[in-house]
Length: 144
Image (cartoon, rainbow, N blue to C red):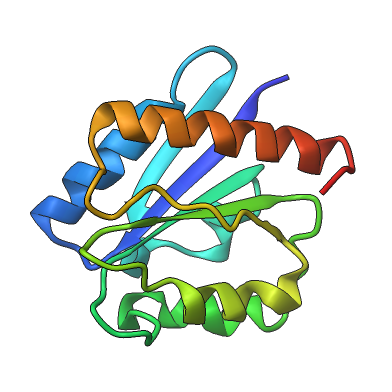
């Protein structure tokens, strides 16, 4: 069974794109199709077909990045039950709390674990990807 993974991120910088590409690479292969877009170019049409949505957040404060504003608006009225979400940092700190809260009404299953902000290299991301894949399996099996 083919799994659809969607990676989205903000801000739209070269460094953020590099990390998003590393995340994408960590999930590619086998029966997995992975697409990636900056949050400012993403829509519910990207998220709806995905089994797993990976959100990259790069901020130094707790606010939702403005690039996610349109998605957050849509989250208020959609049901994503049966799908999984995880977050990865694009900066020195974990700043995903507000975006996580905005997903609550969608009933998407959210993994709490994030890779360490200072350790977003290929090996660390592959280890985190294994954890996320197990989480997705649990969501699909109805255990999460």
